[in-house]
Length: 208
Length: 161
Image 1 (cartoon, chains in turn purple, brown):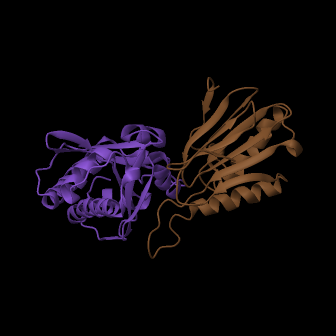
Image 2: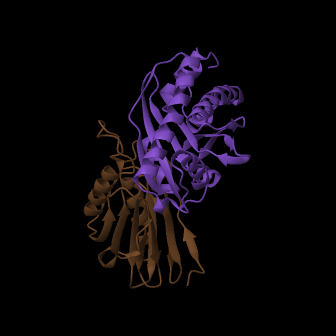
Image 3: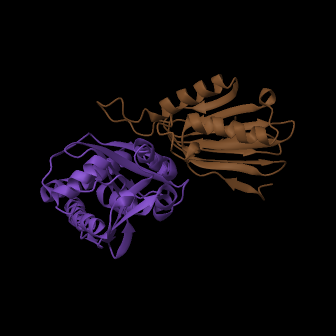
């Protein structure tokens, strides 16, 4: 009776709108957590949800060989998939300056402390996003422990591409801007449910 | 020297002859495979993402190790490549993330590497150099004039393969 999506691409405007609505609540929860942690005002723009190919996703976030850190968390239970949060240097520095009182010229110079601070922040952002999501959609999601890497942006994005390569050639990029100290800082949050899970999310929300 | 850089995207293959460079950026768990026939200065670079093509109707042949390597060999052979004198080099297949308690996750790099080696062996082509595994992304480029293959990684000097 209802159509099943075969790929992220198949989402129509209504379905994308719904994802955007949920993402907007998810990212505001993430911003609240970040704000509490940093004791600082954090505002966010309304996120855009984009379903993009690999090359486009890379170019939206940055340069293919650009060094970034990323935190990855695996979702399981009623929704299976991956959450990926990418820190570019500007956002990382705002966070680290507040948290450990240091700024860095490049990611190479970061020590273990800075690196694990970023991993933790990435994890907090992802968890608060997912928590808001589960409450809203009414699904149970279990999260794995976070895993981080310091690597080329392009290489990091091949991970979800390969993980779901048999299902789709697209990524779902939730692009919101965090506004701190009057500066706009772009986040790099990717929510990547597998196709079955995407279908069940949209079904639960009554749009499919 | 770099006046003719040919970029190879994910799940794609490009080749050229005589002069120029074929390059692919930020190989993560993917694998880059270069074939170079020095006698006619013909070289190609393939960037695969997954081990096997499961759906025979899938037209993206270069996305997969099995169909990608076969198609690359077929194409280059049509342009005069002779297998017995062709130099094969591979790079990539990293494990970018390690999830504790889930050892299966992120093994795709390893599986890619194993499949690439298997297919090349079936094709009776010997790998003369490789830089696979690890936990970091690599940029791979082949200079078609010289046959030189370079690997670029973050925080390490450029490496000649």
